[in-house]
Length: 462
Image (tube, rainbow, N blue to C red; front, side, top):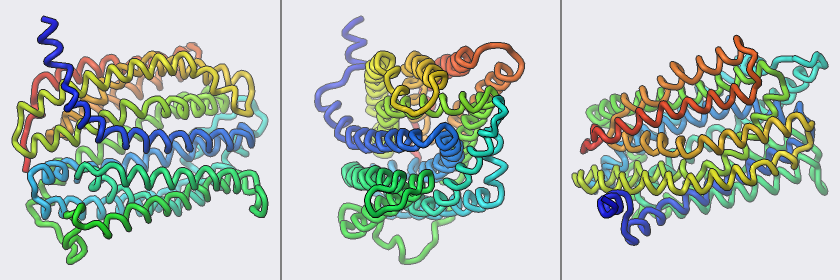
């Protein structure tokens, strides 16, 4: 029995070497990115609760855009990983073109929406329970931040199109280096522009936005220039700009498989923002507390998020090569490893997470709320790890309709109504509401387990 479990869920040193070789650069990249986001959040938090809340609300809106970009790129990546595994560089090129077109289109739509409806969107998250006008100030700072952040959306989209294709070839080092340089620049510029150090003007919230925009141009520039100067390693770029078309059959296949994934990412992100909007009716203090907790939680979540993303790449390559049993075996071991690592991270977050809110220049009530939210997130994290790994397993086999039901439909049918009912129609405290909403992840774990075990995802598509 023990031998069977070990053989099924524990891999060899060579297996973990390959897995970690792919995953560690992605983990480090996202760790640095989230660390700088954390520092950025702290620096904005030193300006005051209204500034921090305004920026947090805008970042919620940009989060939806980012997930839409991720969905657009992922629609092509489903085929891209399999094309690369098969050695079909021309097919890989067509999936890259699709990513580029789709991410730019999503960006243009987002900019139009932010320009025309930005104030109304931010106002959805502002409930003045104190009656001191703080929500008006939060709206002012939010609009200021958003007006500058829009200039960074195009380089972000282009970078995602290139970086995801580079990662599909197993080259995760370059996107990591580009991210390191960008986030380092972001951190330095944040410090200089927010507080007006030396010859730089004191720009406050506007300085935080400008620093982020400049960093996005730096990151995109590094990735694009490297890709085009190393075409032997990036064969998909051969002929990528010699014409603009995508064969009808391939475009149709990507849209059929990818459209549910694209819609899923948008709806899931919108669902999460809707949940936060439900929390926000309990006051601006809750908005600030959730923002602090989310920033800390994101630092600890990167391990299971990136280990899950690697599942889609490795399993996708096995499936593209027609090695279905190898794909199944690798998936079992990677899911087990992801959950194991996440348990360790959850314990660490539970033990030390309460120290982080004390760094912020805000009220004691907000700090206590943030500490409670962090503890709840730590308890739920291992379950999130399993459902996240299940999601990427299903996606690697092109089961995008299933992932659509598993992810965004679940969010809107279960999670959002739970948050809405508890926040609007019960006398429960906000921490209890937060716990019950987070605990809906347990339902998702059961569904994910059944789906993965059914092997419906073991499909070679190319």
